[in-house]
Length: 349
Image (cartoon, rainbow, N blue to C red; front, side):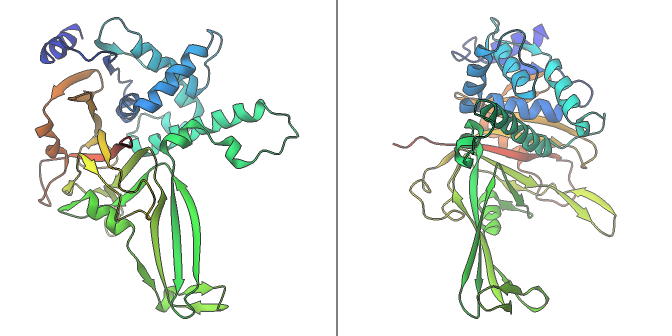
C-alpha cells in the first residue's frame, strides 16, 4: 500500500494539489460497484462540501444512518495528514447491507442501481429530519422538503403528447437524478441524447386516449429536459435483455463521450441551456456480462486524470480516456466501457 502511494506521489512530481487527498478504498469481496461510485461522488465538489459540513456537526454518539456514515467516511479521507493511501469504508458498507438486502449478497451488483439508491436514501433521511423539526400537525409544502441533494443532482423532464386530430397537447413533468440512455454501435453521447428526446408517432395498436377528443387518436410523443441539474449523471444502458438467449447481454458498443457537453438539442430553451458541462468522473464496467465483472472509476481532479481501482490509485494521461468509449467491433477484447458519466455545469460568466 505504501509503495503504491509513493508511486502516485512520484507520478505527480511530489506536487499534489492543495486540499486534495487521493485514497483508494478497500474491497470487501464484491464492493467495487460501491467504491467506484463513492470515488465519483467524493470528487463531486458541491456534494463533498455538504457532507464535510455535516460531518463537522456530528457528535461521536451520532452518525448511524447511511448519510452520516458517508459524511464520516468523506471526512476521514479529507482529514488525512498523508496525501495518499488506502481507507476501509467498513462502517458505510455495513450500514448499506443492513439497510438494503439487495447489497447483502456476494453477487455482482449494478453501480447505477447503487447510485440511485444512495441518492434517494439520503434524500429520505434529510426529508425525515426536516419533518422532525416541524410540528407534527404542520402541513408541509413539497418545496419546503427540497434538499441540497435535489439542488445538486435533480433535473426535470417534460413528457408531451400532441393529438394529431385536435392538436391538443398533454404534458407531464417528472424529475430525475440521472438520464438512462439507449446505446447504439459507433455513436456518441450527443446522438444518444438526441435519440432520447426524439419524437415518436403513436398509431395503429398504440393510439393515444385524447381527453379533448374523448377517444383513441394518432399522436406524437416526445420528451425534453425542462430543468437542468448542476450535476448531470448519464447512465449508458449497456445491459440488454436478449429474448432468444433468455438472459442479459453486455453491449460493448463504441459510444464517444466528450469532455465538454451542451444539452441544446435535448433541453427546452431555458436561460442556462447553453451553459456547457465538464466531465469529471466516469464509472467504468470491466467485463463481458452483467452478472460478473468489475468496476473502476476515472476521475478528473484539478488538472489531473486518475484511475481509482479499489485500493489502487494511478495517474493516467487524458489520451487514455478513449479506451473507455467501447469497441467498434461486435466481438472484441475491449470490455472496459464507460457506464456512468458525471458532468458538472460550468459556472455562469
